[in-house]
Image 1 (cartoon, one colour):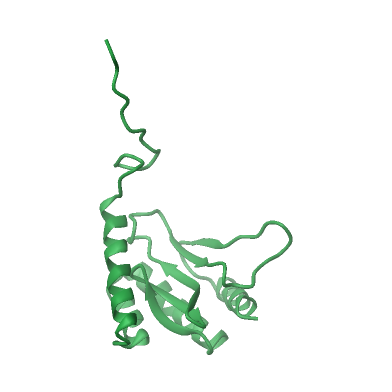
Image 2 (tube, helix red, strand yellow):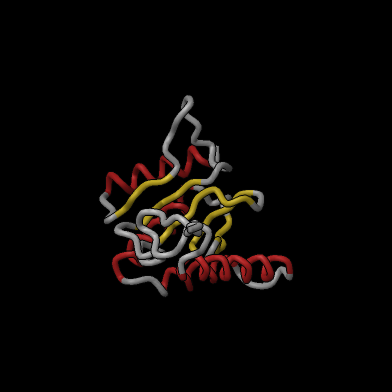
Amino acid sequence: MTQTKQPAKSAGRSTPVEGWTDEERAAMKEHAKELKKAAGKKGDGEADVLEKIAEMPDSDRAMAERIHAIVKESAPELTSRTWYGMPAYAKDGKVVCFFQSAAKFKARYATLGFNDAANLDDGAMWPTAFALTKLTRADEKRIAELVKKAVS
């Protein structure tokens, strides 16, 4: 009797490896809309970001609002835009950093992430994402320092 191989399942995923979760599919659809909007040069990135922040659950919204303010204060040269439906901040059209709500992918914590456009290189290995459950004054200071370094 011949056995048919079944797709492998990944830990923590409810779909086969080659499939997408509902949340991932929704993020891809949002990104496609963002690309279309950017191609037509329609919309206001700041307004789009503030709208996405307003849609977040209370705990994520409070962190996102504070991070938005910190980024704008620390690196006014960054432009606000959405990226896969998340608040993001870009330099020369490339996303430098972004905030991912815990609710976005049903995660245990929110994430502040930095893309490869960020100048955070430190030797052969450095962090590019930070888990957030709340923000302290020390965290806010660290985020401001990271954002300033990212755009340097």
